[in-house]
Length: 411
Image (tube, rainbow, N blue to C red; front, side, top):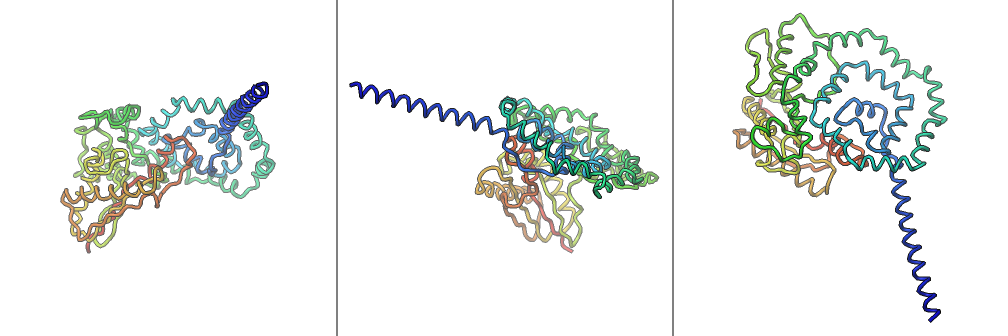
């Protein structure tokens, strides 16, 4: 009996030790998780992200990303890329337009995630978090590069950019850029504030007029491309100012003020940065990329799942195609991002391509041959850090979710 009691006691002690060991291992793994390094990004990539309000702030949402951001910001290479970046007014235009995107609101809603604060609490109690930042600052090779920076040819080239008169001339001409005029008029459009409010609400809760006014992903201002300001702009040409006044058309609610486009002074009356479709020329092939997020409801792929914005885009495309005359071929190719299984992504991309082709046929588009295909996630246009929070990853992968339409017009 005594031996049996001793055996039971030893068994209980061994089990308790095993449980405590497992708990300790779990605790250690949880504490160490925040210090795992995220995939590296170049200084230029960090500048692009920091200047885009639909993506920035990621360094403060996750300690792992903060470590990498801190390493990039304390490296002298940030100076070589930062000076030309700040000297280009086109980058400032893009930053300003990104502030007016509904996705910018969604991005900053991420700071309301309780899990973010939990990750930071874990990092604050992890010595490795501080050690990584300290080692990044005390890296001898980095310190040597800072010491040699004045003699680095890249720094000299960046300094020459600051002395280039053309750089300042571009800033003087920036107010004549149509993108700037579009941004000036955007705050007068109440739909701007409606779309931002819609980004804070659960999707699928909109119907009737509210779906148009507060659609979560409806951008009143398109996210400007990171294109430089072209100079010189002929300010003496009346059509230049007419096109700028035509910017007003793209930023007012339906039924709002419309500038006449038939008068010579008002030029085309169109905002070139809101016209994604290239001109369809005879004997040439034109390619248009449509955002999958704008075309379809999330995860959907049929005609009945097209959004109001998606139908409007396809209606405009159908009108352009019919106006171009005889069409030889139309290729509609669907693409998906890497989230989810590859087999599902392939089916989704194929279904979306078929839905777009069917919609165009239904609205009178005729061609000698209409080809549909799905590429799934095999042809991404951007690559993103898969370790970042899910909401940021979805936003980063947005360009990959698209439908490309290639139209070949007969000679």
